[in-house]
Length: 60
Ligand SMILES: [Zn+2]
Image (tube, rainbow, N blue to C red):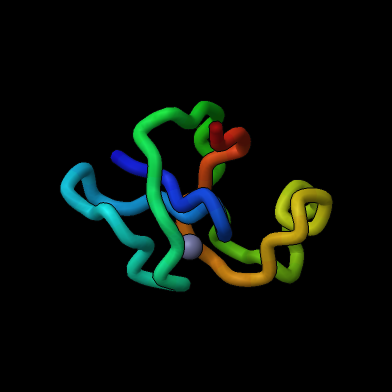
């Protein structure tokens, strides 16, 4: 999977642009974070994630 450099959401391998914000994606990322309840999740809050979804913790 590729990760968006802007919002850190994960996208398909073939995706060169983020389907959520249109930002550039990269294959160089680490740390998977699945957010099911963004409002209640302390981790999501810590990394400023406000929407449910699949994210990368670190994006290069
Ligand atoms: Zn994005």
